[in-house]
Amino acid sequence: MTTQNPGLFIAFEGGDGAGKSTQAAELAATLESRGLTVLRTREPGGTPIGEKLRSLVLDHGHGHIDAHTEALIFAASRAAHASQVIRPALERGEIVLTDRYIDSSVAYQGAGRDLGTEAVRNVNEWATSGLQPDLTVLLDVDPEVGRRRRTAGDAAEDRLESEADEFHARIRTAFLELAAARPEQYLVLPAHLPVDELAVRILSRVESLLSLPRGVGA
Image 1 (spheres, one colour):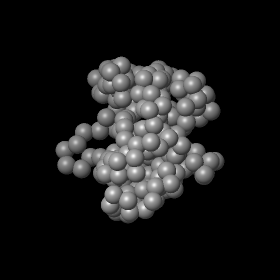
Image 2 (cartoon, rainbow, N blue to C red):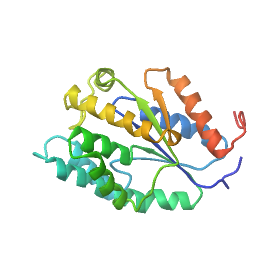
Image 3 (cartoon, rainbow, N blue to C red):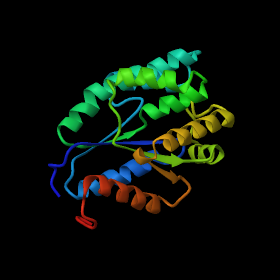
Image 4 (tube, helix red, strand yellow):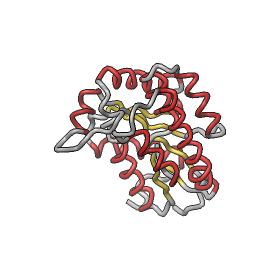
């Protein structure tokens, strides 16, 4: 394959500890081995201002952040990300893989913080000028399993990760409801499956979107 494919936008979503970063890296490596240009990025972050906002909203020690302020910080970071990073890459015909996108705000702030999923979605659709993923890979993880994964060894939890399991349970439910409402745009997989099996299933779905012949470059 060459790099002349139309741009493709794929978001990886799921609770903390679901393995999103691992699967994004697996997919990127495989696609790049086939001659495709892949941009891996993350939210909050992805731009200089986004990374500063990431620190403000996720690091401990910045004092109390109310739910509305939190939601708007995420939206501001996403606005810069969509405008400065994602859209230009798609226009260049690249494959963009982002670790989190709008669904995370809908789940975490809309459901987790009880701000309302529609209200949060509307703010973020405005912030991104309506830019939507071509595919959302949702790795469904039980909150208790996610906590065990992210605290393995001496790993410290960030401000949102350290919320109670009840908070993360609401987030999990919200993600699944989002996927159920638009099943054609989602690939929902149990996060407890082996890494290799998840990677194969994700690649198969992406191949169908790109019309990549199986086995090329393998």
